[in-house]
Image (tube, rainbow, N blue to C red):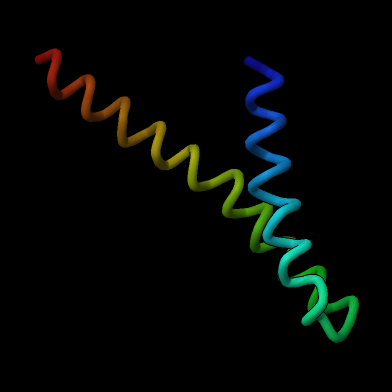
Length: 61
């Protein structure tokens, strides 16, 4: 389970970063892009998990 999470995080963060790496002009731009990816990697699964929990709770009523 932990290995799957690590693989998903690596793919979510590393692959898009490598794809846009050749377009990056400065360190500031890299930090901005990387922080957006990190935020998305944390928030998107959390939001989807919350929606799934709410849907399951609603269905169990």
